[in-house]
Amino acid sequence: MALSQTDYRTWMDEAAASSGTGDSTEWRYCYPSALGWGQECSVALREGLELLISDVCLNEDLEVDQGERPHPLEYTFELLHRRDQCQQRYSLYGSGLAPTDLWVVPGHQRMVSVNVHIDPEPFQQWLGDASQDARILDLLRSPEQPYLERSGTPTAAMQMAVQQILRCPFQGLTRRLYLESKVWELMALLIDDLNTSGNDAKTPTLKPDDVERIHYASKILRRQITHPPTLIELARAVGINDHKLKVGFRQVFGTTVFGYLHEHRMERSHQLLEAGELSVTAAAEAVGFTSRGHFAAAFRRKYGVNPGVYARGRRA
Image (cartoon, rainbow, N blue to C red; front, side):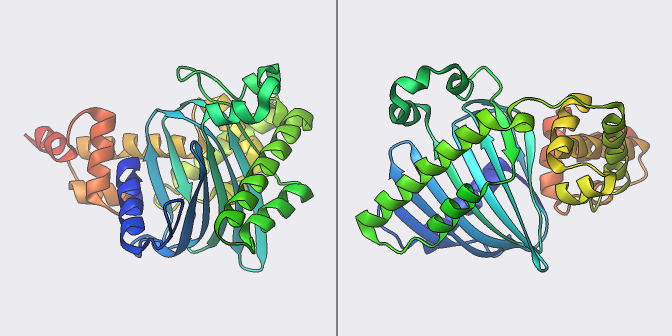
């Protein structure tokens, strides 16, 4: 399922409005049934500091088309349950400018996540004088600068803090104070990992063999345009880890893995409509879109014209 960021946010806001049962600082609501099943809990810990806890399973793969946008500090810990395995991963984003990208969530798999948004001001207040450290300033870029992005495998200390958030035994004010302490604990652990981990703290240099694997991964995406593999599956298929795959795609193609897939889908749909042999609906399905409306919106953003109008013009 492909959605624009506005559509996704509207669905989640409607779910919160219809099933929220919390107070002014905490909301618990059911995930929209059209997307999948599960619950989310949103906690406003203080102004500029928000915690979102999710336990969901999507009906199908979800792609959210995100445009270029200003971004706060954010980190996410994901626990992806697949058969008898649990894969864990964290992502850290500094403040600054977020690029146009596709946010992709795999379907048919239970995913538990802890997501935190922090505005730069409370982050700087928490750090005090340390906010002027050169390593910290790299997390606090201006709205015109691309944000810092890192990902990795959680340490044992991170995993423990995440589990304490998920299993918080308190209620009311005590709960909020406890959760906020764990949110800052995770932030401290991420900063420590950012400063001490060799590969994640700087962009890895790609060897010729790595570049070949990145190109092989792009071929797999093009071949499986309607049912692409997940990031983990793609990394395994080409024999590198998912972090190097993500970084490698940015270095080789100047975009993310699923940004590359999205561009290829748009280019292929353009070719199909230009040939005049398929309807708009058939062209959308041929490149992996399940919704004609979402395909039309993506096509307009890419080419500045409705696909139906473009197709009629080619047949004229």
